[in-house]
Image (tube, rainbow, N blue to C red):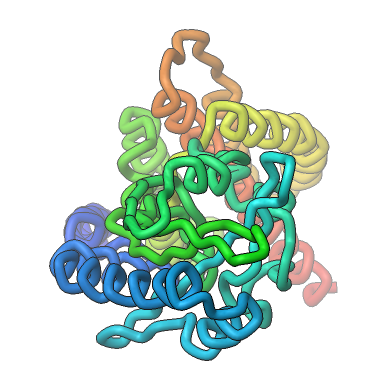
Length: 377
């Protein structure tokens, strides 16, 4: 088998990688796909949706404000039909009530308590926001604690107002921009609040998603691919055992399958603090891998006098492993944006993972060598 075959295989792998990366869609969860399609539907059918929402809000607002229906009867009325299904997409009503004498708002009706996290009847709106802040822990958006109160202050009896705000979808937990339509309600005994519904014209979880290839340092990425090719060539030419040529091809395939997998993973835009925390975790992991270097040195020393070809192969792989670790340790202080910080994190993580893979190769080679020597005995 000639070495030119290895170059041909490498070129084919690179071409397949490029085509797959360009044309493969983002790897999204079912909820993200559903919410993205729903946002497209919402934009296309916004006049239809707004007409349905306003009509229903007018009906329910009239019942309590002008027909003088009791609150309990009115609430029971809405509770039977507060989740709407329009063309296979789910929408829901919400009822917020203002507590007398304070600015606090409570949620009397919203979401499905069997689905949504800690959703129960009459719970404080600010408490709801605090409970669900973990949904925004990795995002650059937030729900205002005073959102419900601001909506109440903006509302009027007999009029439908609208407002856009950041929100969390109660079924799939996607971060969205919600456009809500609402009106004020007030009972004869002085209870008051707002009733409303709405739709999500923008799914921020989807819009802020991207493939990792869009945020990785291309120079280090290309260098790593060429270095992996060099390892494959080295295994092929040194021919440390009768399976070396097959081993070199398998290594070339598996290493680049990992590369394709890594660069095509989908992630989402995050906050500066969250990205810096992730970088700190990766840096700690890089420091913890130092013990593997000692193991590798022991392995190289063990085979240096017994198998010169395997010694050369292992030494070369160890050198490339060290190069990947050094590149992953390289720090640039000229990071002025979230994208630059994210790119540095992905690059470090990518190189660190490759170094782990190569360490496995060294250990597996040594294990195979040890087993063969045991058989000889």
